[in-house]
Length: 352
Image 1 (spheres, rainbow, N blue to C red):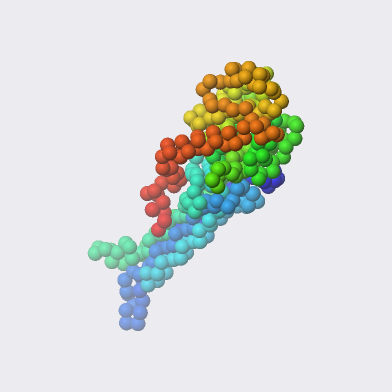
Image 2: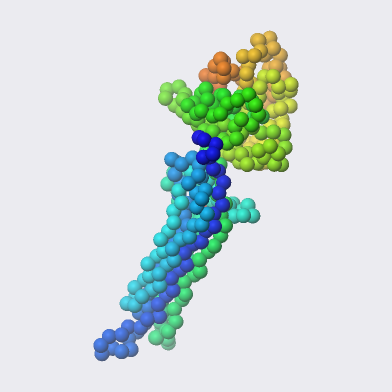
């Protein structure tokens, strides 16, 4: 995925359609000049809807679509004819798209292919005068106007959906590992911040199984406060079910580096600490067995760890086995996900 084509943040100015006005028409025919009310209802204004599409991986197609305006509903007519509903606008978005308003309030999240949620509801159409007739007032001359359109600034953010997220400081070997275990071709170089956008790769496993791995741009101390690449890419880690921490074997203090990474995640979102974690000590082709044994004694005791080398494929299959075991545990323990977004009662109310 080319860096200039990866867009994970867009701001849209949205306006739903206003509802059509109800009609205050009266029936007229030859020999019946004073017929009763027969004004129809106005049509609902168009919704703005988000729909999940598993074939999309970026918000690039929405980058230049700054204004999203739905059609207005039409007014009611004579003979109880209802006005046409305004045409809805359906925006296709990748799975993991989150909608917020400018002050950060969470509106909805798209997590399933084909899932549709109303982002901005259209105004309801007004009732025609036929609704207001009764035994006392048999010829009402009034009807409801349609509800106004809703205007809103909407921010769409993408959180990559992946089974495994690679977490580590810059130049820890994350992109190299992804290029070895998948067909992804991230940029690889011997300097920090080579990876400026997340990269996804499908990792083949035994018996034609597979899982998705995400290479997240490197974290530095203070990232949760906006340093380095800041929080821009930390949110992608939220959608990964398992976190693989990667620290180079030449680190002066692997345990301390691990704690720094853990602290940044906790500061950004404490719930990230509830995810299953694994630790891979990278570039281990540079050390011998004796030094590896010494380093192993200093590793954190509360996380499964393994020494790997993407250059020589050392323990790469064993790493896959560890990851798959954790993913299987996650799937067994996973509860049915609750859909978020416009409330069920509200969706039914606005659907008509």
